[in-house]
Length: 413
Length: 144
Image (cartoon, chains in turn cyan, green):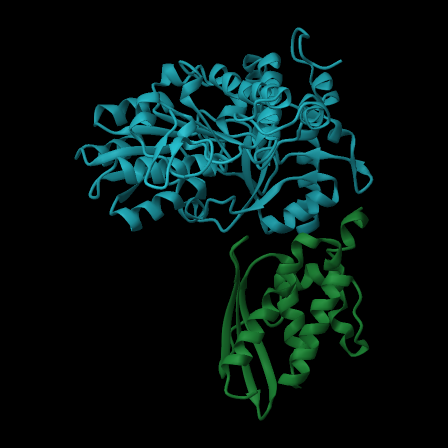
């Protein structure tokens, strides 16, 4: 029995769906507060992947035999599930990649080199993950694109006036902004970002790696042009990511990788491309991972984003109040709209020492710069510890974190 | 109360990490090098003064965790009065100690707290960071 189909939100039932949560770490119950790095997997995801390997596996798209047809159907179902998850107009808007990073690089290299012209600009923000920074630096250096950095406020929110100021000269061809900071937990005002980008003639991309886990996404309501996310943070497997891209943009964009599956016909003289989205999907795809991600999407959809969002909002509020009450513990960022990702520092203790001491008490957090070095510099920090919550996180786990931090404070004083 | 935390964060590590005895730039030095760990932003700058062929004195400036600073501080004492060849042996013994948990050179008793880092695999680089900087400093100096 799993949590699907049960009325209300019962975290104990959810937890029972995740086998790893029964594991002990150093003889204690695992308190896993590192879901923003990678989330744990529910039984339905594990079973779907094992079932495929045991009963229904062959290469996809080209086989003329029963196994290939059935596997193709199971794999392609992730495209439909994703279209529904994001409220895309139809499945052809969904490009399957290998990660968020691969999705962003696809836009940088295909849209960036194929459509943007040297002299045009791309806007990102000060609170991007390296995955939404480095691809644009590479594009800048290879293709003569200007890279502009939208400022954030001291509260850790996007500075909308500063953002708009970067757009007014009309040189910006594309805006690519995180939808939720992996360090601060800040949600950015996606609708307004897209609106402003369009107003000044730019396309808009959102890095939804964090946000898609916690909130219902509606790409049509946002009118966003590109939306990237990854499977493994959404309780699915690693090795698979998604790029939502408006179909008319896909049609204009050149393919990035050449190979099998992305072609219509090939001769030594020339090749013609398959239709979008397949022209962006060269080579045998992540078949098992697609099947796993489909199961993960079905799982979160069945639990429901209203319930997920409410649960995580309660956890975040509880954590903010517990952590803020500990003298010497400082939560980084004061964004109005924030989700279940909290970075903090402990006075007198380095983030890595804090993380190790938490680990000694069975509590898994991340520490370091969180793949966002420029943001750390902007905040005047070298590193922070970060606790992040998932669908299975409990209030008791937040309390355990707060209690452990009190101990660590004592240890260092 | 903190017994479960003490295996790694022994008193020696905590005290040295908080108040290192050698955590200053030497007034006079003839070799120096920086080391950093981009994963966590830890930085150490090592200063060495030689007398003849041996390291007479080592000081450092560091920003980092308790383990990296304690390691630098214990290093300063372990290498004072030693030749480059002996320091290379000591550094190798430290490397083995943090990897295996066993300090196999009885002459290096003062470095024993570092062997406990073995229990936290993700922290090995914190302990070895100052030793890498010292190696660079000695390679950059004219003596060898």
